[in-house]
Image (cartoon, rainbow, N blue to C red; front, top):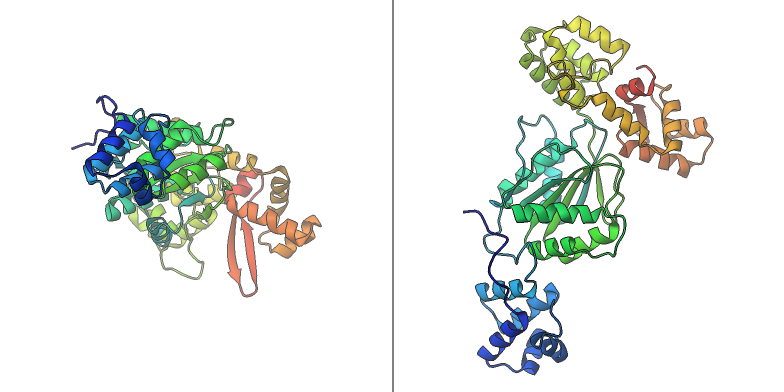
Length: 437
């Protein structure tokens, strides 16, 4: 049975209900103050209606002092905020009310990333996680997988919504209209440009969630950033809340854990063992009607396609669809000349966003100085931090900041060698930027 978050019942006066509970158990205001650690003056003001909106912590301490049962505690919490759209934390507020979206296809690869994120968010060790990476790398798909694992394993409510201004990639699955509206308004307030730290929607959602472990997912954050003060207030007043966001560059919020979503692993030229990128491409190629013998997961042609496309899921899926009309030789010849030439899905035409547009937007969103360095780095097959210093003439710390920015924007691939890290601009980025692989 679905929970009813909004209620048509007339509000109960908090002060009257508090006085009723206190006199029923035979406590004076002084005795209740001693038991709850709330001042006598605060209790008197609440009972006389001079203070009408007690904080959540105050209500909890008073309920503890009165030793209220479950339903009486819920009634007191509800009376504390009669106009609250979310209502008090009710026993029927659970995962059946707020479910994560479902993905149309199984996820390929990402098992290690998924396990890490589920462990960190599930334990509460990380409460604000930002999935960053290049457009089309699979941030939303990874967020869906993590949300579904937590929902299924821990029966967590998942409040899923798109960031303001973003085109929703998936439909939210919040089954109560009042709660869905509250979540949308809360996220809108998180991005508000002006106003005090607190907002009614942020406060209401914090009071609804309270200590109940809940996952809020904000998908598709662009260059507009959430306000640090309001995000901090939401996390502080709802200790059970975990927040997972997807963005291109990091949001750079206090206590944010930036988690880079890299492209899928590509086959090594000397290794015939199929990896995630090859499995994804071969699967979509077979669905497009390609000859299974031509798209074997461990085949050299598939391996070359994966390397030319950097293991980018959106690119692999798009190019696989062209095998419905092109042979593998034609696909490879085209990609060798321009890795971005086949990024539009032949089966969908313009019904889907062009991945090339998303890549170009990511490059445009780079800070100007970083974009200029990136364009210069496109001429190098591989480079180290020392190469960036030699190329730009800047100091080690300055070059370190530039490389970190390019990494978190997802435009570089890195491999670690003894004593150093070696970087490479993605082939797709070179192509969109006007270079060649």
